[in-house]
Length: 608
Image 1 (tube, rainbow, N blue to C red):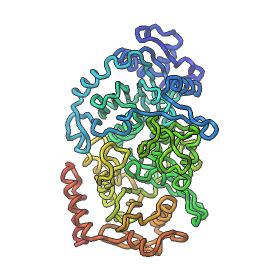
Image 2: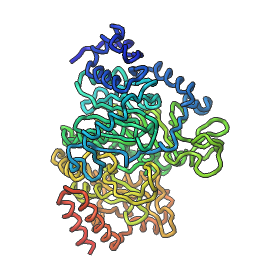
Image 3: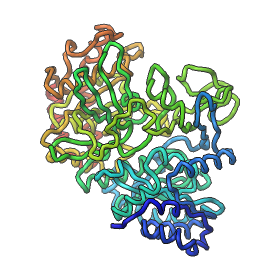
Image 4: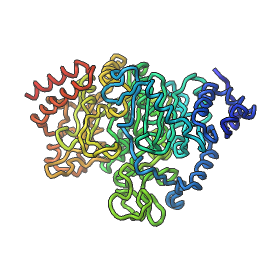
């Protein structure tokens, strides 16, 4: 272990031409060597390859942040918004061809295609390294190379993991400072751990044909070229916290999941925590920051995280979760005082907006804001109709800005999970809520998750696709092995959480939503938590356990008895088709646990 004195922090900013890197002042180089020579050696190697004009080691300070921010404003890369109504808020615009994750350009590089699985695009690691080396060669000439040491999870948590991202994007630096714990403290943790995930990123020329997001799970490294968009460029997020971490979790006996974490406190003062998986843009942030309806007086909701959960078996036999992130990178369209008042409040200061529109008084605008009108669209053009803000426009803001952020967010142990929830966007078939009969059934429910595609993914929207555990784009290895790992987690738990599936998006024959959603979703959360403490019974059905309507809190609910009944209508013929669809889907995956087929056979016989 290396001792480190915080007084040496000033020595970590290095701005030198690469050929002179070895001649950096003795004090700066000595301090860097004392902290983490392994990082220094890797940075030098990468710098000699990419040939930047300057190297900047990010210390995470406010001074550094403001300096980079002002530089972007001078270069026209960042626009300062109305300082009176949106203080310390800025607008960034990405290239029109670079506005979402690019799953068809995202690769998992393992020794064999089978290890990566059919859910991923596979590339041979040797071929991938050769390809990426050619793309990165000399790509930072005339640019600054930023070194971003970061920590995912509380710095003092045994479950935290660290990485270093090298990038030529100042936008990435500003966002990473919000999304993770960057700088000197992260370097200290890396020095103590003796290992880190290596992330290499360059925007390149933003040519879509030369855009690659490549992962090497066995090497714990990531290479991303040709994109400046969040999920492709903020390598600590989906790339590290899910794709690389899921591989590590499988090997180390934990779970890295695309899940929110929320705390729910009853009027009696009892608090339970829920981990819930939804595909992107299907309501995770709204649920994580839910505001209880007025008729549920005394109920409180706290946010631990809105996107990613790392789950571990505790010594007490329960499942515990930490949020590895320190900020939110949320989809902003649809956010207003009615849909998500907490998110709406927190993004009114200290926020980076990406690809929103602008009003005449220099405020950000997005569809659903319900105030003012845009004069410039997300590309800076005069508004002529259509979507003024991009459907996948984003906000980046610290968790500290959330008025309902949980005080347990920085607990190094995490929080105990009482319920796991899977949810997708289904216009029909799937009921509002139902519970798994046991752990294996719950894992199969998660594996069966399907949702209509959204603007968060490039490609056609509104198409129904299987998205198991909301992890299809993010699992770093074979999905069959991933499901087996989930099944095996039960052996580590003496008191596993109950598993549920929800569907806030069921529609009637006229195409109208049957459930009001948003704050009223707490009514269903209440039923699930009542089930966790055996407070209410459930109706056994062919697909799982459904609530009896009398056990759902409907006080003040704007829904008729007929609508509630439709929300739980069991379409037997439709579910028989679903069973056959799942059999076909599982047959295409490889390595699927046999118990899934047993569960489908049982469901089919009950339905028949």
